[in-house]
Image (cartoon, rainbow, N blue to C red; front, top):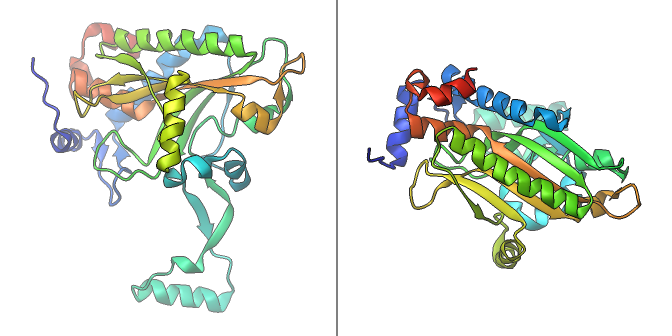
Length: 303
């Protein structure tokens, strides 16, 4: 069967089948009940596979401290993706002025000021400050599921401004951390291939900003710090990354003082499955009605 890759057509079909609900802002569509069921069942499948690992589960809100964003260097590397939370701090007179501007069709954003929080750009970020100090023997393994935000407005259904990531974070000695990352890279590929997806892995880089960012991206590729699993969803030539595997070396551990039990500087790594992107990959590959998906896929997601 020949598969057509048409962004507008795919988006229209998702809407027609009630899988997504359009909103007024690009990249912020709602999820219908079938879409949501697929996403959560995939997350549950990941939990069953990872269960024997014994990861500690943590949950955080979709905002984090502005100071943390500054501390990890996010504004140096990805200013184009960040989002600050602003609020109103004025008096009664200023509130009346704000209301008048809104009802008069004037711009009113200048009357808001930054708060102490920003939208979370990566589900793993809130984890690192909580483990400052000495790790136990063998390090730490954490699991989180969280909403993240990246300012990338787009008509592509795979490129959302707000989406969910299921992540695992490993902290410990460098060799242990890299071995864990590499083992999960194979594990993740086997998982997605087992769901009938035409998945393939490749070395990748993060979307660093500007001219200096190109050098950082090249260095990241050269050191093989990041891998992705790709599935054709909106393009055959440019498949979509549905999962990533990242070795941070000592970037976060040096910032937050995370050390191994022998007092050496720990390394960290993380892997993340994009729930919306995996769901879209399944819908693109197997069709818009899960009742007609292959039995081998259904048995895994609906055991």
